[in-house]
Image 1 (cartoon, rainbow, N blue to C red):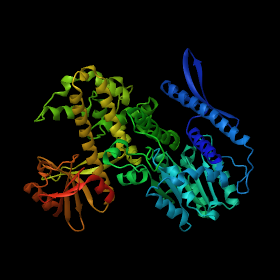
Image 2: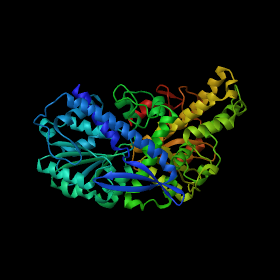
Image 3: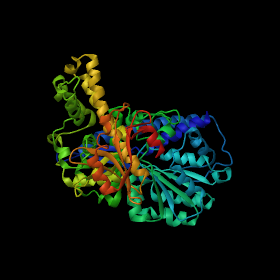
Image 4: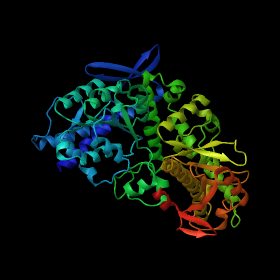
Length: 597
């Protein structure tokens, strides 16, 4: 009971830490109303100007913090009423921040013993249990990708002697670098050797002062682990302060193999639907459903990505790194831009993607394909109130048309947003090559959290089902159309997943899509050392039919490919069925392929 209570307190404190404190005040100057965010800290009052658009959301967050603080107070009172006595391994030092050691820390990490561990924990293990070095270890990535859980898990691996020398600091937005520094001095004096500092980027002057962790404490023998959701903050601090005195572990990308092994959830369809975080309720992990619907996915994009970028840029060089993005952030339109890019089939970071009148690419592609269906063609658009469905999708995904945007989007905005999303590992790029025109090269942008993209598909389905005109079709016809739409999306996503994971598994090889004048190879893996290559088609199907491999059997295409990339040592179709060999083509099951990488 005590252990459960301590864990509830720890989780509440963590949730409170990332919510804004203070209050909103209003002043009237020359008949105009101005809003300010007021914070009283250490007897000092500060006020920051708020644009009108920022006020409603900040008010909600402040109220939420107050409610959670009341809940926390009740839990702490409940614990105090049990009249528990401190044991000798608890540290009654006068810490300025929230520091846990001994029994308190033991209670906080207890639940994670039953969770399976991510593969990347090995890097943290080597740092903690390896030789002393003057570097800090940084765990960073988007929310709900296992950072704090990983810290708690490594703490459970320490011996009793090592655990007595371990401390966990939970940073809040009220803390300063001086506060953390003072607590580290106390811990150092008392012989603590392993210090884990969570949400350290909430400290206002973290980026400018990050060097103290490596130069003072790590160099004196402490193992310092920093973690937080503010990925850009860590990237900036490495560039400005830490240089080569840090080891970086990024948690945002979660491959299929880990999704199945750690969460205990099997199947490419489940990965397409929910992949990207460690928070889906599986048999091996904690329960939550980040991408269960368009609303929760939208909240994730807004809080985990848009605000991540905003917070980092505000903290860095006192906001001087905003460059062209200041107006976009202040007016809350970053989420719109991100959603427009993710929804676009090619994930293009161009102004035209954001400025053109929104039309669902997924509905358009499905409609075109079903119109060409040889057995049962249908014009889907004739059975939809397309304007109403489109408006519903836009409202669900917080998408704006140009006339609704409060500022003009420039190409420079798009360049910078792409730069930041690459730093966050939310997107990665795959090469696109062409034959016989070898000079035609490009990039395919892949979203690394598939659940985010699939949530948009859910929004489309939800709005089609609400449409009265669509409901006039028979239930079987409606089901056929919706399944075709979802399968089109799953197919494109499965291809992206295979490309991305293959590229990451073989950094020494060149992985790319190859286009011809007519047709393409979905994936080519070229080995520059042996001057050989393998060619692939990726099909969202469980069936095996000759049309699937017609391109990789085409003699002209294969001759062009072998001339440029060496002998073709294998022809493969990756699909959802069983392993098989047909007409010299090797069929590979997609889940088995991804797990073997």
